[in-house]
Length: 586
Ligand code: GTP
Ligand code: SPV
Ligand code: MN
Image (cartoon, rainbow, N blue to C red; front, side):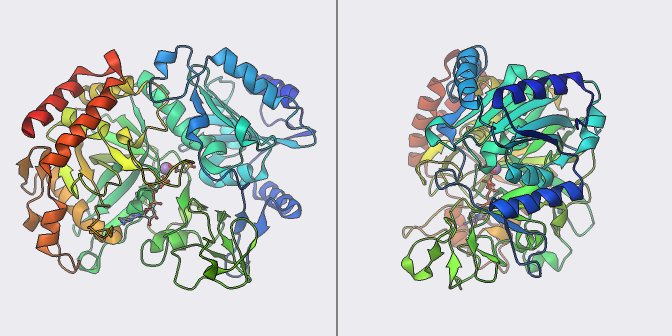
């Protein structure tokens, strides 16, 4: 039975059902009873596998199709009416043409299946920050995942009332045909359409599709920012908590940094890190003139491989109950394993493909982009402000990527305008989070290349304009945990040790410490980064902070080529910053 009398919702559900022709329509109310029944159905069909109830209570395993294991950037479209509004970094097709193509794929796609109607909220239901969505899907995996990742259920319809102000999302697994897989956004119509996939970011439409691509478009109209950022609170021994938002590309360390446990020398003094979010931040100017951030999500969709008791004990603890694992190893005792969990790969286990797996075969057991979907509430360091509808005030914005050379461990921009430039020139090695080659350096401005719902040139201008609306602006930094030595090993120990860099960043925000100016911005004086107990020498730190002018001159060539794509959409302020950088490097 329909859970709302909202005419806009009812008409659209009826229209989509007429096209996809499901046998049944089930409205999701968000109750545990209904979710239990859906999980039971998932166990019966094999879509979900129940895990060891004693060791992993409430946990399940899901395997996606072999050809469907990551986001598909080349099949992701922004269908604005004008091509120019999607810009040179997005795939575009005329919205009507795309709609015709999609209709053919959706027609009858849910025959013999159930259509689930999921009302969900990005942000605390009823808060002024929140935005609502309705996702239609024929996947139980999507329903149970959305129950973790969003605030989901009938209270969303109550909050929506009769309003047409919700994001429409249609997802059909169809035949999982990779050649006809489409992830399509119609920003001007508040609509998302996904077909022929069953994987994470392609189908959990509240996440990248809504909370970044559609929300970034709305943010420009409404003067706020939707960003691919973690949010953390750094508590000092005086009990003051200072908040940092950080944008790193996919699989470049957001979840790890957001849940950081400080090294012993910090913990013993009373330092603590609180996690507000690990992937997405919505940022608005507060009445006090500061920039305030909320995490619109309600759970974590985190990378499994490499997560262990040393690298991220908080994430590990988060996944011990009520968690969905996707594409990891299933052990003989119905628990899970992935590369980098420990040094004892299980015998007699089943790999991510569902085949018997021999750890000595040299083949990976878990997919490199295997993931956990876990409730934020499970996280031992979840911030007390997590549910605060006002969000948290941001002192520092940090950009960062995976760069073997070039980018130093950390540097600070000279101004908001220069900081926007620093974000716009970000580059990072590609990872398994998207289909395609891994380890290739590409420009990924603000870590938003795959997620910006409009012309990236307009997006930069929007960032520059936002600076004029924030009287008390955060300072902007860049970090790189991934510099390597001649043998390809990471030089910086990373993970919890990143606390040492965060401390410097926060000290800079509150004018508690000096810095050295160089061609690219402000660098820490080596003695200002606390290395006690890190095993890193002053010399090593010095090498991590080195700015190689020849490499940076090459870098400016790459930036120029990239900027050229934007033509007249490239903000003058960024052109200006590029010439300043070129001059500084002479
Ligand atoms: P998405 O969920 O795809 O957006 O990824 P993310 O940015 O949250 O990345 P995550 O924290 O899951 O880390 C991805 C990979 O980077 C994992 O394999 C981590 O082990 C590795 N990693 C994270 N932080 C560090 C670090 O400080 N140093 C090094 N060397 N590796 C790191
Ligand atoms: C990312 O790729 O940045 C993710 C995973 O966080 S997904 O939801 O698939 O986009
Ligand atoms: Mn992400």
